[in-house]
Each structure stands twice: as C-alpha cells, then as structure tokens.
Length: 253
Image 1 (cartoon, one colour):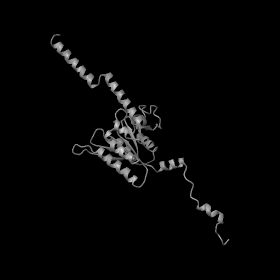
Image 2 (cartoon, one colour):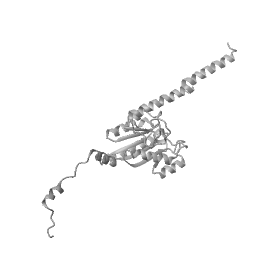
Image 3 (cartoon, one colour):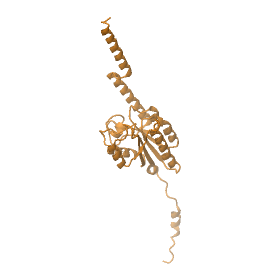
Image 4 (cartoon, one colour):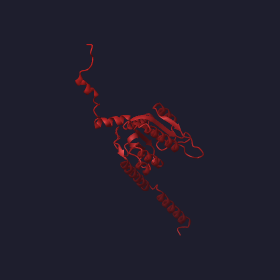
C-alpha cells in the first residue's frame, strides 16, 4: 500500500527504553570488560628445570582469565644473572605470548622492580582514564611492591598476587585483593592453599594467603631447628666442637 506508516498503537512500544540489565547480566558485562595485565618478577618466582614453561604459561593464562580478558603479559629478568630465564624457557615463553623485558643491572642498582612499578602504573592508569575496569596480576614475593598495590586498590583496581608460600613478605599479601600460591596453584605440586593441585584453585583472600604464608614460614623454621641448620644450633655445635678440641689439646684439663 502507498501508506507505509505503522499503526498508532505500535509507536509508543518502539519508543520505550530497553529493559534494565539483571544483576547477573551486569556482573557478566563488567567481567567481560575488565582488562587484565600479568607482570612477572622472574627473579622472585622462576621456573625450575623440572617444569615446562609452556605448561606454566597455560596455567597462568587460565588463572588470569578468571578476572577478565588477558591483554598484557610481561616477564622481567636480568639476563646477566643465574636466576634469569633459561634459553629454552625464553623461547617457550615468547611463543606463549609473553613479552620478555631485559632489566640489566646499572651502577650496581636493580632495575627490575623499577620497571615493573612504572609498567604496572602505566597499564592501570591508562585504563582508568578511559573508565575501563582493570585487574593487575603481580607475580613476586617482594614487599617493596606493597605501597604500589595499595594505591592501585584505592583507585578500584583489582589486585591479584602470585607468591611462594613461606617466602613472601606479609606486607605484600596484605596489600592485595586475592592471592594464589606459586607452588600449589600454578606448579600444582600439592603444597600450600591448593593441596589437591586442582586445575581450578580457589580464589584466596589476602587474609587467607597471609595466614598460609605465616604457617609456611613457621613450618620451615621448625624444620631448620630440627635439622640443626638454624643459626643458633650451628653456633652451639661450633662452640661444643671448639670446647672438645681444647679438652683434647689440654689432655682433658
């Protein structure tokens, strides 16, 4: 027909706004829009020869994707140090999508922590400036990052730490939202929070991680005492040995 206008009753329906998102839809939308950056202090957490760097990369991806879309992955290391990334691991991490950042020591000063701090802040602030939800995953044991992480949380950046139980600074774990054990949740050796080594480790809160870290430190100290490797035990053994040598030299007098 020549007149293609819609019937009057349909016009108000087309003018109605879309229905509001349900709470679950809002959560899903926020999750999908969150951009995740993974920053790895390799000197603190290195891959042993008994583990495959490619497998570790896949596990770190799966862990990071629980918080949003993984858009940045960086590994920081000093190539002149023994603890640096091994050649084979370097190739595999590069193939897995990691950016390897060389951090050579300059004038006897470390550059790893400085580069990580600058890159993490740049990653977070550039996204905050465009109202983009952001999550930072930091792999380290170093408590020097605690202040940076605390300030990021002030800006509503979600902060996740991957740490080695028994070696992490308490200040680091108290400065994050969630934490994962390097050995239990990534290497999956059945130690720490995820004792079963499940492929989907539980998300531990900062308080839970700090408690687990303290338990691991206490356990390690107890083992050193039992094996006689603590400083006090070694000093006592040396004192007794010197006393015995003096007794022998003096004929028991």
